Image 1 (cartoon, helix red, strand yellow):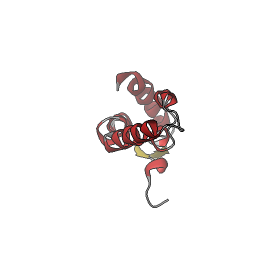
Image 2 (image 1 turned 90 degrees about the horizontal axis):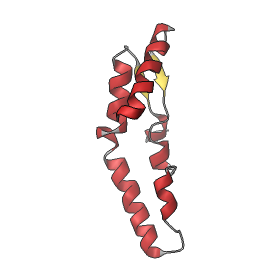
Image 3 (image 1 turned 90 degrees about the vertical axis):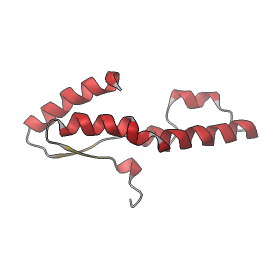
Length: 92
């Protein structure tokens, strides 16, 4: 949480000083589209890997509010910004 939080906090401050109030961020894209390196270990031709792959995606998405989204909310709201996460918008 810290290694991604520090740059986001600094960047959020710079964005807020420019006068912006809302920003779009890419949180949820890695979970939604399996964009993390950890997914390279799954082989699509193996049924066992497909089940484990789906379980890992579901785990990441179920816990995103206590990890990635919490970091984004804290770093942006500390500067009076509202972050929007379009990759997690169910109505988009």
